[in-house]
Every structure is written in C-alpha cells, then in structure tokens.
Length: 157
Image (cartoon, rainbow, N blue to C red):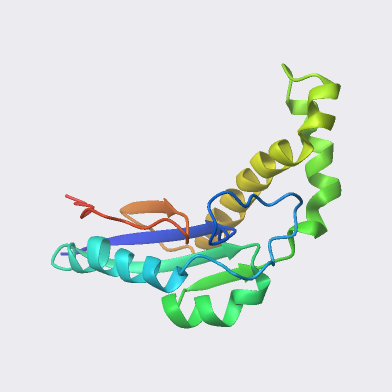
C-alpha cells in the first residue's frame, strides 16, 4: 500500500535578482523567480521519483496573493490560502516580546529581518492548519518553499 504524503508550500516567492531583498511585508512585487521551474523540479525529484511508494497532496499558504491563480493551476492543492502579509503587521510586531535576547534598538534597526522571521513562522503555522482541517492522516509531511529548486531526488524510503 502506498504511503500518503503531504507537500506543504508556504511563504512568499522571491524576486529574480538574488540581491533584492523585500524591505517591507509587501510580497507582491512581480519579477519573481521562475516558480514554474520549481514545480517541475518538485514533480521530477519528489513525485515521479517516489511514484511507486507514495501518493501526494499539496497545500499552499502564500503571501503572494497576486499569484493565486497561477500557483493553484500548477499544484492543484487540496486546500490553499493566499493573503496579504500587511494584514498581519500589527500581530507580527506584537510578537517581538518573544525575542528575549534582542534589544529594542536592534529590532528598530532591523525590523524587517525580525518581521520576516515571524512572518515565516506564521505562514508555516497557517499551511499546517490547512492540512489539519482536512482531517486526513499523512505518513509523511514535507514543508517546502515554492521558490527553491531541487537538484537531487528526495528518496522518501
């Protein structure tokens, strides 16, 4: 019997130029990496490589609400949610109390670095919740970014 595997795609898709960092929480900026190539690498190195032992379901939580149609068409997820990261700024800022070893001045100087880390944790939480809402039991769960290219097979045995 084949195992059931969930692939959870989460977060924002990066810009094409490596040195262009997002300087705020707005993840809708166009000029994205070729996310279609990422899907091809996932299909080749995870799904096709493990086709004899596993069936796969996709779930997506993304801050790129402008790419909803494209990503849903690419992955055909069981559940998905595309949101504006700016809607969570107040909530993310309130979490800075959990950064125990970081001074207030450091947070002010590097606020987007810390907001980015908290935003990443939030999108992980949200994509896991999407999977849990289905009440489906999975043998394996892969947490993955929709903008990271695979170069080697991922053997799920």
